[in-house]
Amino acid sequence: MLFHLALLTRCGTLAVLGQNEAGVVLLRSFDWNDGLFDVTWSENNENVLITCSGDGSLQIWDITKTKGPLQVYKEHTLEAYSVDWSQTRGEQLVVSGSWDQTAKLWDPAVGKSLCTFKGHEGVIYSTIWSPHIPGCFASASGDQTLRIWDVKTPGVKLVIPAHQAEVLSCDWCKYDENLLVTGAVDCSLKGWDLRNIRQPVFVLLGHTYAIRRVKFSPFHATILASCSYDFTVRFWDFSKPNPLLETVEHHTEFTCGLDLSLHNRGQVVDCAWDELVKIYTPSCLAVPV
Image 1 (cartoon, rainbow, N blue to C red):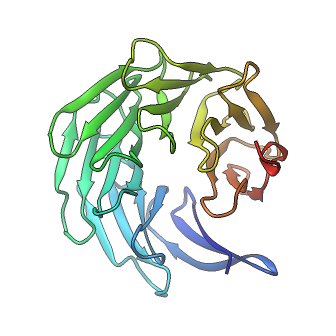
Image 2 (tube, rainbow, N blue to C red; image 1 turned 45 degrees about the vertical axis):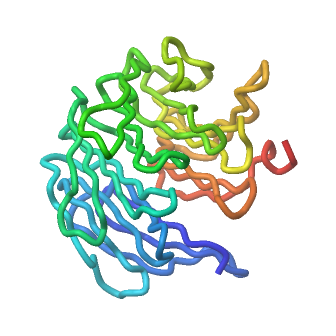
Image 3 (cartoon, rainbow, N blue to C red; image 1 turned 135 degrees about the horizontal axis):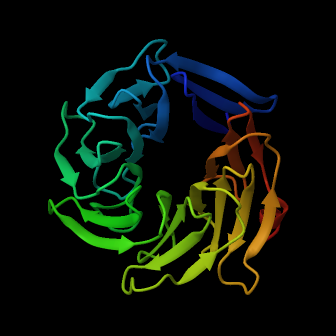
């Protein structure tokens, strides 16, 4: 099996896909009683993942089991919209973000949250761990801000007024611990250097509707990808004078999911409201950059 891929549906289905010589196959599916909004794989067990849902709960699943979930955490009072498993060594921590305007810290081995982070004045759409700094995560919100948090302290570490619109997604550069990117309803992507937040270090324009998700490349220090409600996925190199590398338009509905493979260089997966999943290598990533 070349890879495992987890997909979610608004009707509450978790589908786990695998790729082998015959192509992409459905390995397992699980049903939940509310829409599932985000998923994160365990960093210490390749068969375990966590989803979050519209009823405010998080669910732990084991794809080797026929039924599940193994455990359910329900503390958020509104939709749990984002969940991420820490990738730094020496810690097994999960962070979730909710429409109740809070982020919560979890240890999957403990049956309740370890801490609740308050400060956002709008719904939280995205929470993501720093791949460099243990215990540090970022959150993006409808209050137009990007915020940086440290699990060792209860208050917010840094508030960045990132856009004059709801911020729907953020990601941390894999090659620079001080660099993040945000994507917003104003159709723009902005890069932020945590050492100087007075203005963005880059602004990428081209999308014509809200940007739903943004991801830095795990193989290229200056390349990122974004997907939008304009049906497109776009690839950018923010170091170039003309940063837009490629636009992919192979969906007929809002493009809402996007990720780049950590194992297969240049491989991308995206999905949309047209109920299609596309796995491909865009031409701009097919050759060394």
